[in-house]
Image (cartoon, rainbow, N blue to C red; front, side):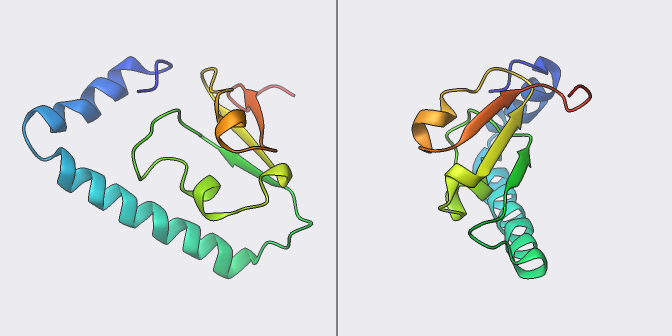
Length: 105
């Protein structure tokens, strides 16, 4: 759960309480996989390219951080998140995590 926006997190988790959480999770996974597929198809990143993954999450569900799960060259990826998700650097060796909102250099 993202502590940076508790209102958003609460609204997402209300679906779990009313029983449609698994359906929502499947939908999110499918849509995020489609986004990654489109990214790869249209941009065709080379192993030498660098990638900024904006909006990473510490969540462990199957729909989270889809780009990190699909691509293997983590040493070429910088992940940006609102809260401290530096633990992702251990989950994805080579990854560089930066905490921020993208408005400051």
